[in-house]
Image (cartoon, rainbow, N blue to C red; front, side):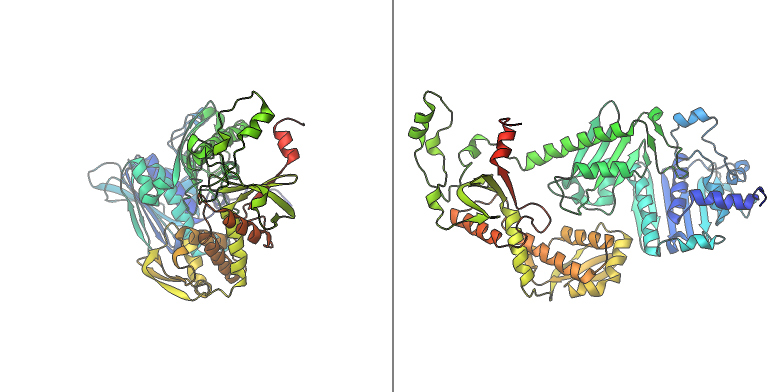
Length: 575
C-alpha cells in the first residue's frame, strides 16, 4: 500500500473531530472568542440541541472585513505570534483552529462590524458582502455534522446534549459577572444581568446557596484558590461542580477525586460534594496546550499540588465541622459529660477516690459527677455479643458510651434509631398512596437530562407516590407518599434523582427503598437529644435485634468498639 498525502477537505474533517465532538464544543469555542473580543453582552440561541442552530451574538470589537476570510483558515489567530507567547497568554483562544473546524462540519455564517456606523460585513458560503450591522459579531452555525453523519451516531440524546450545552454556558456565566449573558431556546429564555461576583452566584443557584456553602480563600506557595465548597453540615446539591484554572474552566479527574477524598468523613455513601474552585497558578508551571479543546491542563509537580490541596480543604472542612458539632468539653458540658439530668444516680465517690490517690489533687468535683453503675441495668444488655457492664451516659447528647468486659462501645443514637426504623419499615406494608401538597414544590437545580429522567420514568415515580406537573419549562412536585407526611425533604428527593441517573436499573425497587430510607431517617431520634436510662436501654436492645446492626440507612456506623488494647496504643502504653 502506497503512502499518499490526504486532500485538504479530509484533513479538515479529521482535524475538526479533535476540536468539535458535540454541539457543546462549538458553544465553548465561540463564547471564548466573544469574551476575548471584549464583549460585555453575549447571547446564545439553541435549536434542536444545537444540531439545527447555534447562534452566538456579542457586542465586542468585531472582525475586520479583510480578516473574515482569513479567520476560517487553519492556524490563523490574533492572539499568538511566537511560541513564547503561550506562557503569557491572557486570552482563551490561541490555536486558530475553532472557526476552521466548525466551518468544515456545518453551514457557517459570520456577521461582524468594527464600529458604530451601522455598516458591517457578512461572510457566507466563502463570500463577503456588506450589510447593515451593529458593532460586534454574530456567528450562526446551522446543520452541524451534516456532512459527517457518523458523528451524529455517537451523540447522546437531545436532552443530554442540551444539558451539556447549558453546563458549558454556565461555566462562562459564573466567572464573568461583568458580562450580561442571555440563553434562548424553545425550553427556556434566561438573562443573567451584569452584577457582582457574589450576586452572580445567587442568580445561578438561588438564595439558599449562601447558607449551604462555605467560603474558600487559600493562598500558599503553589497556588491560590477562591470559591465555595458544599457545607459538610448543611449540604447544597447541584448537577455538577466547577473547576477553573487561571480563569479557564477545565476538567480534572484528579482535582475532583482530591476534593471527594477530603469529604470522605463528612458525606454519606454515594453522596458527592458540590464545589466551585477558582485557582490561580503561575503560568510557568502549567501547560494549557496538551489538549485540542484546552479542557485538560497539565500542572508541574501535580502530586505535590494535589497533596497540598487536600490538606487545605481537609483543614477547612474540619474547622467548619467542629464549629457546628463541637465535642470540646466546656465547663457547662463538663458537668453533664457522663449523664443527663433526666436520669441520674449520684454517689459520693470523693472519699474512695482520695484514698486511692493520696495527696493528688484534681479540679474535678467528682461528687457532682453523674454515672450509672452496674446494678442500675436491670436487664441483661448485649450488643454484638458483648455484655454491657455499665452505661455511663451521653456525650454531647448524641453519643452513648457503654463499658464492656474488654473495652467500651460508642453508639451514635441517631444512626442507631435510623437502623431500627429502617428494618421496622421494611417489614411493614408501606402505604405508597399519594398525598396532595397544598403548594406544589418547584424542583430546582436539576439539569434537562435529570428532568427528562423524571418525566420518562413518571409511571415509576407514580408507583412510589410522587407525581409532577410541568409549567413554564419548570417541574413541580404535586404529590408525595402518604406515609412521608411531615418527613418530606426536597433535597433528599434530588439525591434520589441523582442516584437513579447514575444507575437506573431496577428503578421501582430503588425508588421505594429510597422513600423508606427517607422516612426512617426523618422519624428517627435526633442528635443533641437527652435520653433517660430506660430509653437508652430500649435503644440498645432494639439495635441488637437488627440484622444489620452496625450501619445506618446511609452506610454510616451505628456503633464503634474500642478495645483495651486500642486504648493502650492511644496512650502509648504499648506500641
